[in-house]
Length: 404
Image (cartoon, rainbow, N blue to C red; front, side):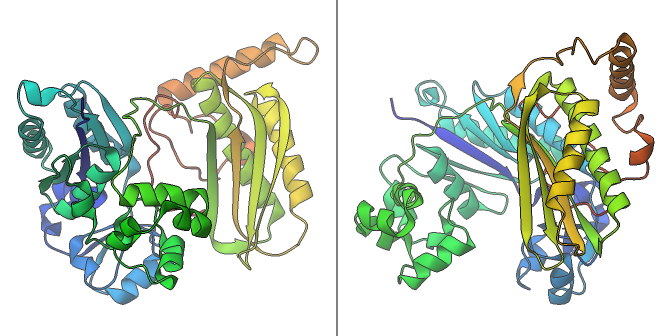
């Protein structure tokens, strides 16, 4: 049976939520993201697009391009709540769906044409979301995830588009190669240097030519350009790592401040591990200096989720890594090689008091928020709050970088 895959995308989601909360923002140019000079545009309204503004660009540049734009820092908790409402509607409406980001969803409607009609059902689902949330949403419907995603982007804003079976290649052919998912700025420039502009040209090329130019990615891009994609709708994807990082408003050489932030990060992520009943066996510290050179160092460790084990090892990695004595622009840590499990008691080092302390602190955090209990050395060190368990299957909330 041919697949029927639906892709739903909430249009300019962060901007739409802000307008839902304040109608005075309707039809005005909006920028959501970090407000400092080093802030990043997390979302922008269509009114700013004509000025060359796009998400991911520096906020300072966006303001120069569109001076009249209204800047809003945004609230991750608010966006998460609206996303959850949409998720609940989709969950009770379709048999199988995948939440790929805070504002993007895939649903497998295969077989529904026998009973109701997939396009009609998707249309009614879209109108229900608009009616119950007040948020604009677009969708694309086709035989696979890639073509449906491209169709959604072509349908925007606040519209819908179906690509009938067998018409995938003709639909993609006249589009720019930049419309193919996975073609970023660097790949796009490489393809443009080869004289490629439209998807049709890639469709007419042998696959091995693309492979010679871009390696394995060339094969994937060739298949996507030809509307070939067999990736399934996956309702849950277990996370392989968890990380956090900070970009500073002003570069710093204050080692005590850097160590305090690393302790706060480690304490927060260790709590997330315990909350998700996970253990890590590999830790990584990353530093970006003021000259934009970035370095990282990782260490394999016995499986753990305990602060008193992770913090000293993170600080030791930092001590080894921080050797240039330059101003620091960004620091970050990552826990990887995750497995399910609870903290294993060390027979010789752990005490009943320490185990009870972890239990008590986590209980307080679960009830009053993850920042309700912190080490003294981490006090005042701002960390990104997580509104939910990062291991519950929901995708992470992507916002502009928070600033310290």
